[in-house]
Every structure is written in structure tokens, then in C-alpha cells.
Image (cartoon, rainbow, N blue to C red; front, side, top):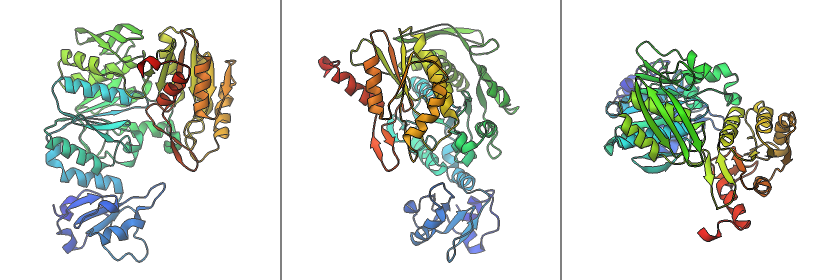
Length: 495
């Protein structure tokens, strides 16, 4: 495709020279190391790197031109095309290059603060139960026709997404389910992507270090339903129980399914039962009533199951296939995941890293009727400081014993982070310990546990690392818990 056609509508600030406008574009890249002769290189402004510093390397590798919202660096001798918004320009150009692929795929996007990952896994399981070959794109990993791929971001850059779409199409796949983060929406990574179904799980306090205010955070999420350069989604699946969802206001052309447990929801559940074996519930929608069983632990997953069922109805999947898919979706990595070494108390690892998510996770533990809930948690460094005392208060109010520790302190002093959270924790009279060493904190909690208790290790979930000021080290809450439990003498028969 010729450059002028590819960048038409992408916000060019001036017309390219005629010879360049007629040049055939061989591909798109935002990483200079991936540039090949005939490519366009997109130079973004970043928090750590300025893409302009790689423009010379891109030119040396054969780039036709550099596209950027920034001015060229001093002395740059190649073709430089300024646009209004670099990532949006890349997304719109990628959509044109992969238009044929898009016409053969059905895309479901899931956004919200909590539940995106579990909901996406449930939707993907429903689609596979219906016989579809799928791609799943999200926080933990990407799955392409069942093959795992490493996930760098919850939502990749647009050209990476389109390359995943193209590979799925090559493999005969038809359906993509993806988590769509607020960062991706605000930055323009998914700009112009035509979603068939858009799901909104909920909105609670998070990422204010990036968005600044809850209103900005909400407006980023709302872009999934109101992208000015994409047709509105054919279906919106919205959480009736969440006040923010009622402000989404989908386009007139978008059909809406409201799910939830409150009176007025179209897609709802009754007779919910939660125990150590999972969930069972009776689902009601448009006169249909059917029973759903899930191996997922925790009552908070009822909302995720309803959201996934809403997407399933929007995608035209038969209820019996949806029931089969949900039953097949076992524990999602790091989402209320059980660690079992034969100990007489339950150990759960969860990704909860906001005050609302922490309350929900502890409430889900309470539903299992333990004698006590012992919570281990920390707060991330270089992130929204204002949520730290809120998390401390949530843990203290909902738990019987709390161990406050570190969670990816990054460039900050772990003790300073702990002190921020301690302000909220001390608003309660819940017994607690402070231990900056996360492994020792987990050991303290497991030592404290007695038969019938639940130990909830919150914050890191599926993560297999701990980010410190000067290095990143291997650290997996699940593996640490297993190692400590085995040091107590549990699990030896299964080794």
C-alpha cells in the first residue's frame, strides 16, 4: 500500500513529498530493531525513552520515513512526518494494512478495574466449547490457538495486536478475546479497532498515578464504547451493579445486556452457592433459566461469570455450550488460586492490589466460612500513594490478622510504602505484624494459621518476580507458600 493511502486520515500535519507519498510501504514498526527496508518507523514519546533517539538507527535499517507527534531531533537527515497523535496514527495505519484479516475476525474487548482477566478466560473457554479457534490477549499471557505467548503489556501496541490477529487468521481462527486496559485506551493502542462486543466489569480506584482523577480514569474506559475512529461495538455488556457503568451511555446502534445481582439486571443469578469446590448458580436471562457450575473459588466470580455469559449471548453461543465452557475454566493463574500441600487450612493467592479488590477477595474468603482470615499484603512503589492507607484500612477491617509487607517497591523505600499503608491499618484494632521481607511475611502468616483458617496472600497473583530499586528478582507467592508449607512437613507424600 502506498504511503499516502496508508496515512490518509491518520492526522498528518502536512502533505509528504510526492515521491514519498507514492512509495510502497513494506511494514510498520515502533521498535527500530524490527525495521526492515521500506518500513515506516513510529517514534513515540515515552516515560523512559524518547523514540526519536532511535530514528537514526531506523533510517540506517532502511526505513522510508519516521512518523511522530514530536519534532525531528537536530541534524536528522531523513524524511520526518509529523502527526497529531503517534500511537493513533500507527493504529489507523495498521488497521488499513490488516483490513482483510479484520473482516474475518470477531473481537471482544473487556475493560474495568477488577475481573478483566478472569472474565476473559471465561469468555475464551465459552468460545472454545462452541468449537471456535481463538486468541486470548491479557495480563497473564497471550494464548494463540491454545499456544501460550509471553505478555509484556496487558494490551499490546496496535501493530503487535494486528500481527496476533493475522496469525490467528492464518491458523483458521475466528474469535479474539482481549483485556483492554485504561492505559491502552488512553494512549491509543486500540484506537480504531472494531469490537463486536465490549464488556465493562466495574470501576474502582486504581491507576490514579497515570490518570490523575477517577473522572479521567472513567473517560479512558469509556473509549472502548465511544472510539471516534471505529464503529461502535455491536453489543455492550455492562455491570448493572456498578454506578459508573450507567454513565457509559452506549451508542444508539449498540445493543446492551445488563448483568448483575441487583434488582433490574436483565442477566442475573439466584441460588448462588460457594464452597471449597467452587460455585453453583441459577442463571436467568430473557425467560431462560439454567444452572451453571464453576470450579472457580469465591463469590466475586459470580459477577465475572455473568459478564462472560453476557458476552456469550452477544456472540450467539448456545447456553449449553456456555455452561460447558464455564465448567471447563479452572483456576485462573493468580486469581483466588488455591495452594494445597495437604495443610489443614486454606491458602489462597490473589492479584488484589486495590482497596476494593482486597475487600472483595477477603469477602470471598469469608463466604467459605473459615475460622479466621489471615491477610498478607503490600503496596506497589512508584504508583498511586493515596490508595495505600485505603488498602491498609480495608485489610484491617475485613481480616482477623494482617501481615503488612512489600510488593514491588520499585524505586521507593519499602519502609516508606509500608508506613503509608500502616496509617490505614492502624485505624482498626486488628492484630498485625509488619515484615518488609515478603517471604518472611508469608512464613509468619502460615505459622499463625490453624486448622480451618484461610491465609490470603494478596497483591502479586500470577507475577513471578519482585521489582526492587536496583534489580528484579524471581519471586512467586505460590511457590514461596509451597516451599514454606513443605518446610512445615506438609506435602511430602505428594513429592
